[in-house]
Structure formats: structure tokens, C-alpha cells
Length: 287
Length: 273
Image (cartoon, rainbow over all chains, first blue to last red; front, side, top):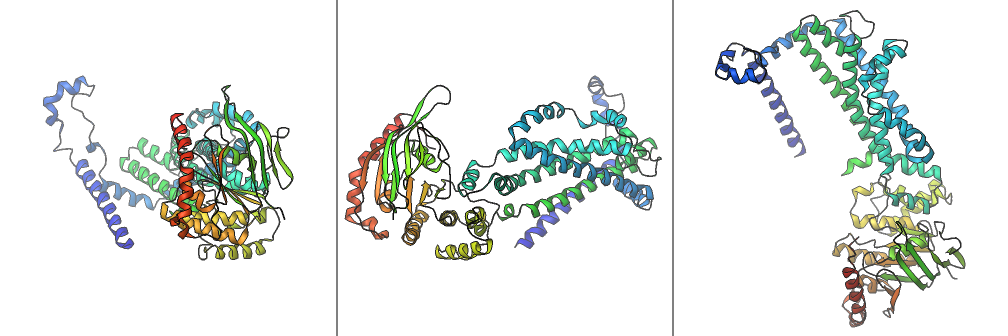
């Protein structure tokens, strides 16, 4: 039964992807039969909306999936492409792990200590609304290498989310757990270790998952802005730089290759995280 | 042996959050004999939980005194009792730690207090769970078993601390009536084995008369005993009591008092909760 369900869901998903690819292929090849003259009757209206005379946004401007696939196969043999994967993963993981190592203890500290909250939280709240990408120039100036600068920016992407989730999670632990633990003779350290820590774990998992998503967004943009670190063009400055480089070089198929690669990379990271999260919070699996 | 002898003397609790003083408990006096099941009946929000929290040490009192076995738990001079393993609360919606298995929950108290080594605690926990009909769910998480079982696990967890008194705050409120009837018998069975003082809050009069040696019917906010009923149905009891003549008589005798308070609570705009 479960197996059948799995299969059905699987085939439904495969079908949806296939339909999407077919529509895309058709759209991309429709340059001719969806020519601008079809829109001639609406010319004035379109003009009023700010579109240039004979030009409309249309999938036809995007390379077809078949062309993308061809380009992808060509790129698979290139060292630079894999180097880009490695660079982006390295930056994402570096920033993300740093955000966990600093963010989780920091969030817990804000949650359990009124003094720490009083001192740390205002600064945190002032810095939090600054988008990580606004840090790019300052970060490049501050950090000795561009690599460090990019990792720092990805760190920021995950850090705020993790801290906010840890803080909120720890605060929303049911007061009855504390009362029960206290009346059964737990010390403050026991309460921290056996109530606050496991009670916050689900929020840590959620915060990390969201943080990981932001990390990928940020690393791509940071790579584009900073020129992919000190790497030479084409030798792999990260997937974000790979996309930018393809755009500058006029290889539109490769742009899409880079985009899909990031999608896959993000998916792999989320799966790893989800797997880790399930492992860390086994009691949530039971419902 | 006087173990679990609780004396509540003239306890007053005034909540004063924003200057608008609300009296939750009004010069309440009640004596609970060692090993007695004392049922506290009152409409929701009448202040009975406030009384329980004062005994448990979760909240302070405004004046008065609560003494257990000669030891002053709280008084006007030191208004908040220290919570400890001699008075364990079983909460309304349950407070088993969801991240620990049932057995790990059960051994929590003795291990925390350093009374038992982990291995000994595990052995005792398994034995107590088996006694309460909980064999086979030791390694499940609380979320994996029925709510009735969770309540039993929680009572076993409480008893593992060898408490002088169990403080139960409407523990069966969320259960359906069939599960509830099973739980009542299970509680009595556990009680006959352990003979611990039970301070049991409920708003269900039938539950109160079925379980209790005595039933204290409380007035609604401020809370104090309106009528204390001695239930002269001999223990051990089972479900045949529910259809007995005496049981019905006792219900009749007290129903008016309870209904009157419920009406008052309703008119005062007290909501469920």
C-alpha cells in the first residue's frame, strides 16, 4: 500500500517534470510561430504599458531544454564546472557551519540569561535588518581574502535565522516541563541540558533549514558581485560566478546549466539537513 | 505514620497584575489526612489550580500557611514553597517530556535526585510500568501511545519519586468518557498499591465521588471550601459503585451546591480554561 502510494506520487512527480520540460521546449522553439505580429492588434496598449514596439517577453528568448542538456554534457567534462560546484559548496558549508556553531550557543544564551539578552539582543536586532548582500563591499574591505569575505556573507545569511529560531524555540518550551523537571529535583544545569536543549532542537532544525536556503541565495549573489573570488574566468569561481561568466560570455545555455546546478546543489543540501534533522529529533518522526 | 498530611490554613491568594486586585483564594482552610484521596471540585477558573500551585511551589501565596507533615511549606513570611520530589504534580494536559522515551521519562526523577543509579532506576521503572499495565511501551515515545497511556506513564513517573503527595490537576479532562472510566479504575489500583496522599482537582462531580474519600466543593472565585462531603462508600471500589444507591444519593446531595457555583461562575463571565 505504502509502496504503491510512493510509486504513484513518484510517477505523478515525474509526469509533472516531463510536462514542464515539454512546454519549455515548445515555448523555446516558438520564436517563429509566436511572432510579434500576433500581438499587432494590441500594439498601442502594449506600448502604453511600456513594452518596446515589437518586443515582448517570451520563453522564445530562453534556450530550449534540449540545447541546455547538450551544453550541460559538454560542461560536465570541464574542470572549471566542477571547481565551481566545489567552491560554492565549500562557501555555503563554511558559512553555514560557522552560523550554527556561533548562532546556536548565542541564541541559547539570549534565551536563558536576562543579562545576555539585555546586552546582546539590541545590537543583534539593529544588525539583523541589514541584508547580507549589503555587507559585500564592507566585507571585502575588512577580510584579508575574498574567500573569507564570501564565507562571511553566507554566514550572515544563515546566522540571523538560526539565532531567531533558537531564541523563539527555547522561549516557547512549555512551562510545565520546567515545573515538572524542577519538582523532580533537577539542577539548573540539568534543566538546560535535558529540557531546554532537546526542547529547542526542533526549532534549531527548522532554523537551519531556512538558513540553508538563504545561504545558497546569498552565496550566488556574493559570487556574482565579487567576481567569484580571485579565480580567473572559466576556472571556477563558484556556481554564481559560473552563471555570471556565461552571461558575459554570451553562452545562454550555460546560464541555465548554472541555474539548474544551483537548484540541485540546494536540494542536496536541504536533503542532507532534513536527514540530519530527523536523526536529531527522533520523537517527531512518530506522528 | 503520618506521611502526606497536608494542612492548608487560612490561605489567601490575591493576583495583582495591573493594580486590579483579583482574589483567587479566600481564607481557605482544609486538612488532608495522610493517604487520603481528597477531591477538589469547582467550576473552571475558580482558583483551585492556584491552591495546587501553592502546594507544589510553583506560585506564592499572599497570606496563610501550608504545612505538610509538620514542615511549613509556605507561609505569609516565606510565601513560596520550594518545589520538590515529595509533592509531584500531574498536569492537566500532561507534561511528559516528548523527547524522552516513556521509560526514560519514568526514571527521570530518581536519576536527577541521585537516589538510584541509572541501572537500578531502569529496573524499578520497568517493574512499575509493568505493574501499571504499561509493558511493551517502555521504548516508545509519549507521542506514540494513546493519551490514556500517557496519563498512566505520567502517574508512574510521579510515583517513582516516592512522593508523600500526588497533586493531580484535572488529569483526565481531555480524555473521552470511556477512557476516563478505565483510567479511574487504573488510578485506584495504583493507589491501593502505593497509598499516597492524593490531592485531585476536577470539575466532574461523579469522578470526585467515585474516587475520593472526601470531596471538597469549592466556591467560585474567590475559592474556598463551600461544602466538604465524606464519601462513606468503602474502598476498594470498582465500577459497580457508579450504579449503587448510595453513590446516587451522594450525587443528589451535592449536585445543587456544585450547580450553584457553576452558575455563579458562568454569570461572572468566567470562561472555560
